[in-house]
Length: 484
Image 1 (cartoon, helix red, strand yellow):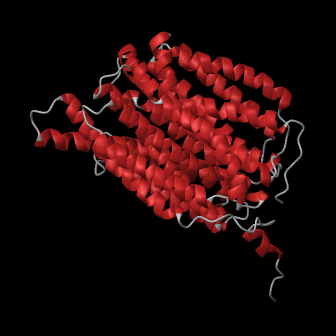
Image 2: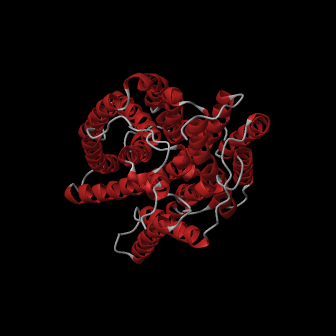
Image 3: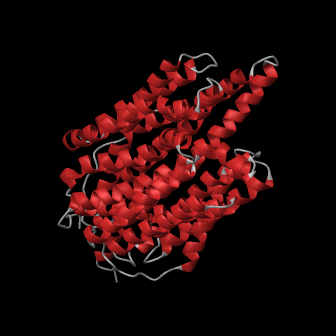
C-alpha cells in the first residue's frame, strides 16, 4: 500500500539519514582536490591515485543494488546504524593510513557504508512521509544528492589548505560518531522484513555487471576503448548485466525487481536523474582542473569560486520542493532543462585561458539553478509512480544508475578533455599549457551541452505520476483467476 507509516519523529529520522548520506556523497569527490598531495606523499602516479575516487564509485555501484535485498532481511535500525558504523571505520582507517593501500582500503570500506545508507534513506523517506508532503522532503533529499559531490572540492580545498588531507576523514569520523549515537536513540523500524531467498548467482552477476561497467568507464579515461583493459571488463559487465536482467524477470522473488521499469514515469524520471548526475559530476571534475590549471587559482580559491553555484542549489531545493507539491513536475523539469542547456552553452562559448572568472561563476550558478529544478521533481515523480512494495526496488535501481552516471560522466569528461587537448596541441604547436588545458575543457563541454539537449527533449514527455497504484503489475496479475 502507499499509505505512510506513522513514526514518532519523522523529521529527526530524515535528518539522520540525510546527513549520513551527505557525508558519504561528499566523500565521492572530497579527495579530488587532494590527489596531488596524496600522489606526492605516497609516491604514486595519477592513474593509481585516481582509484581513490574510482574505487569508491565501484563499491557504491556494487552495493546499492544489493541493498534492496538487505532491506528485506534487516531492520531499518540495523541497516542505518550498521551503515554509519562501517562508514566510521572506513573514515578512521583512511585518516590513519600509513600507506596508499590502507588509504584505498579505508575509502572502499567507507563506500560500503554509504552504499547501504543511500537506498535506505530514499526508501524510508517514502514510507514515513505522506505523498502530499513528499515534495519538500524529496527536495531536501535532492539537495543532499547533488550538494554532496558538488561541495566535495570546495570544502576539501579549504580543509587541505588549512589542516591537511587526513582531516577530511577526521571531520567525517567525528560526525559519524555523533550520528551513530543519535541514530541508536531515534531511528524506528519501518521496513517490512520478508527474508526472501538469497540468490547467490544474482549477487555475482550484479557485482560483475556493475563492477565491470564502471571499471571499464573509469579506465577509458586513460586508455583507448579498444585496449583489453577497457574492452574485456566492458564486455564482461554488459553480458553480466544482460544475464542479471533476464534472471530478475524470471524470478518470483528477484534481488532487484526490474518491473519498476514498466512504469513509464519512473523510467523517464530515472533517465532524467541519470543525465543530470552525468552533467553534475562531469562539471565537478572539469571546473576545478580548469580554474587551477588554466586560470591558475589555488585549490582553496578554486573551491570557493564554486560556492555561489552551490548556494543557489541550497536556496532553490526547498523552494522547488514546496512548489512541486502544488504544481507537479512538468513545469519544473521543462524549465529547468532549458536553463541547464543555457548554462552549458555559456560554458562551451566562453571557456578560454583568459576568460574573466565572473563569467564562469555566473554560468555555474545558472547551471545549478536549472539542475535543482530538474533533479528533485524527476526523482520524486518517478518514485511517486510506484506502489509501496516496489519502493526499495525503485530506489535501488535509481541510485545504482546514479552511480553509473557519475562514473560515466567522470570518465567521458576526462576522455574528451584529453582528446581536445591533443587535437589543439597538434593544430596550434606554439600554444601555452593554459591554452591547451582550456581547449580540452571547452571540448568536453560540447559533449555536456549535447547531453543537456537530450535531457531537454526527454523533459517534454514528463507528466504527473498517475494512478499511484496499490499494487504492482505483477501483484495485479497474480490476483487474476487462472484460466483452466
